Length: 190
Image 1: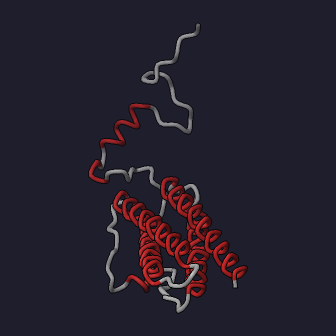
Image 2: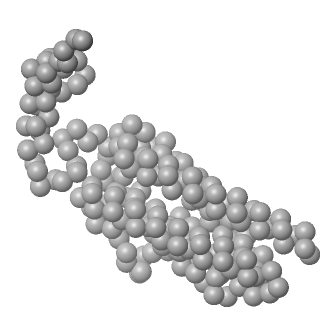
Image 3: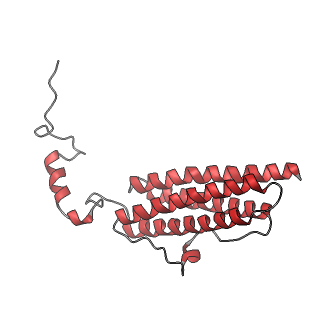
């Protein structure tokens, strides 16, 4: 059985750093936390994108919560539960975006004064159950396009943030499908 190369003494391929170099780099600028010297993203732009996504998720959480509490009518029980489930998931997304902002050395912006201005989605209440569902579908479609653009912009420069946007994007697509299904179900009953 051939012996395994010693990672301490074996030369690293041209694109990879040797262990000694990795250790030295990790000790420099330790106060930067997860943000290492090799970080190649445009930190300011990525923090802006993350804070806009945070605002979008908070606005969506608030809208879904309002819709949950105000949904009325014969078909509203199942729809209201769907609104509540989505509100919880949007809140989880907001928490994940806020966590990533702090990992990158930024500050999550929770200011209510500028929340709707920073959010890509609007806070529209809706006057009927079908209006509520349609507004939620519009908001999901906005988030889908916005997060898809963020994924494309970030590319390979920050794989952790890109994966976060991809993960949230997948859930937003499910939410849009859910809202579309509810519209179709209510349409069949009418």
